[in-house]
Image (tube, rainbow, N blue to C red; front, side, top):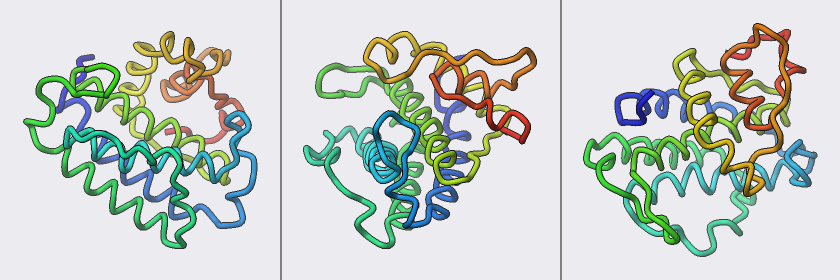
Length: 201
């Protein structure tokens, strides 16, 4: 599967909508709960998710450096953080809808990378952490079959590197017949087995 605008953009639109839905359903009293992502609570997880898939995705499309304080911002301090995140996602999706944005390389500060690869990684971050947030708050993060296939491709391509830098935990073993979505989640170190009896797509 090639990473290019026509294979990623439709799923970016789809999953940004799903991310906004999940964010809107996060109740304030869940923000202090354990997230299942190391020692992060839900607030820390949400702030990371919002920072890099909202603001971060928009800045990368515009070829702008990320704000120095981005990783330290508490987006959830605002009562309407979910609405603001949805608006930021809309801006990011609109920015990535321009064909020229997918051309050439993106300067990441420490390195450059083809823009389409950057988009694929940001999109995977949107889905994987969206799944994390959904799981931690009693929800599901739904994806289409096409999005699941793309996620598996991106995870397979980058899992070794992410694991090297502790971005992914070890793969989780799954029973035969697991869905493509479940396989992608498991390869990224997430455990979809508690949800195997409910629809994952």
